[in-house]
Structure formats: C-alpha cells, structure tokens
Image (cartoon, rainbow, N blue to C red; front, side, top):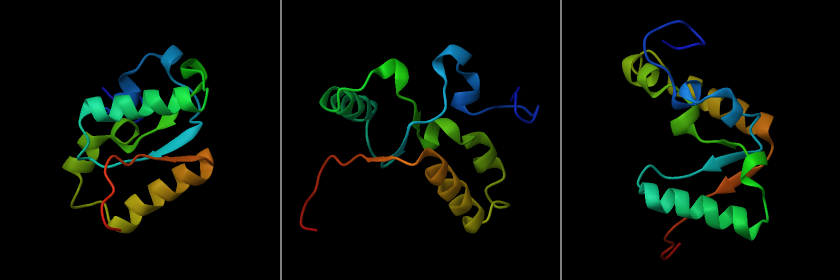
Length: 107
C-alpha cells in the first residue's frame, strides 16, 4: 500500500525505511539503458571523486522516486506536459544535477 495515496503499489522510495531517506541533494539525469552495475559504479565513482559522504547524499532518480506502477497504469491519463512538470519541479527543488554518461561517440 502506498503511504502517499493509500492505493495498491508504491514507488521504491516509499518502500525504503525512513533512516535511508532524506531531502534530495542531487537530481540524477541518466538513461534507462544502463545496467545496475553501470549505474551503481558511476554513482560510487562520483561520490569518491567529489569526496561526498554517502550517508549525507540523497539522490532524486526518477526510477526510484516516481511511482512506476502509477505511471504505467495511468500512462494514458498522464499527459507528457504533466510528466515534464514533475521533473521540472523536482529539479528546481533539488538545485544540483548529476548527469550520468557512459559512452560518448561523435556528438
């Protein structure tokens, strides 16, 4: 049950215990094509390079924060402009963006 709306299914963020959640410090722009190893490896490398403490760094990642069940089930009812608005609002609230790129060929 989703704690935000009481409906069946929830986002991954809603299922995570409170001590592992916090106000997002960085918005992550990434590609759904990345493997879990690529994703976690990139984040860990970035944390080390920037000398950030993982316990104090909270990432806003669409896959974890958006309720994918709701988007899938209500996909035909959610206008692209509404999804855009969700991302814009989140990015403005967070204020910092991390862009994840794994390969870059011939821009």
